Image (tube, rainbow, N blue to C red; front, side, top):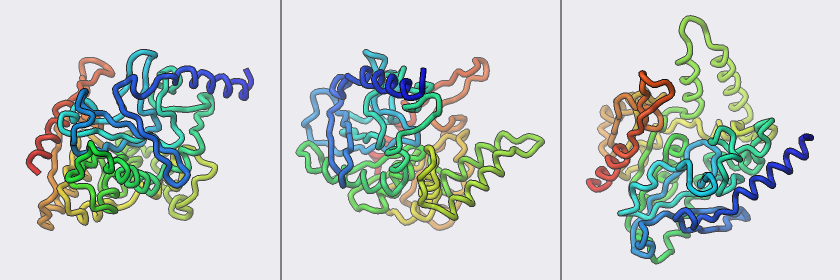
Length: 332
């Protein structure tokens, strides 16, 4: 099959698989036009309490370019946000789709059921996604969405939780730095120092035993290119210079600058763990009191524990983690 034919076939397949609507999965659907860009937003509320006034719990996705709703034709197969199903008693949960990525997709249209590629052979991301996959875009867009959602009668504007996991923690942090509307920040599995580039390096360093990992040198060379041309997203896939430069800032200074209650949550087996500990040392030394740290012993990036007796088997502790977040919110 020619590449053009394959491309058309995949588009037709994706369109066929995507006939489901957000409402079919218990969401309310909102669409906003922000500076000529169409943005899709989902709100999950407790059934029967959609119009009861509650604060927003604004959840920011991590780095994966996945649709918000992934299904097998009947049911959802993957949840794209950390908090869904746990926070709706007290909040209206809001999540925003990635630019250039379909809102809804059948799992068979995804590579490894995780990341969305139109061209599975060449692993090419949509151009619109690559262009907008940067910190500044996400922060500006999300704050505009909050402005719009808080005009709804069912939103209590006296409280606003902004929560971000992994790369989403950077977006959540800078949202709180740019706006006075957020009242609480949950910084989950983030990395306070030069986050993305340092995470990439740490990941490869952990593979080294007796010999140098050649990918480490490659990452340093990439970083030199990024520093020399930080705004370039052309001729690139997902990890463009613009993405790497915008998501590789020293976030520790921003975390210290934000004065609302902040919860920093991470697993001790996550690549960010040593840097979270280092940042906690700094906050103690500088007598910073608005930041709480919750570390989960033996858990990884997505709060799972590996089972050594069963290969590729992991136990999920997300329920416990998010319940701890809710307890922290009650106290703060």
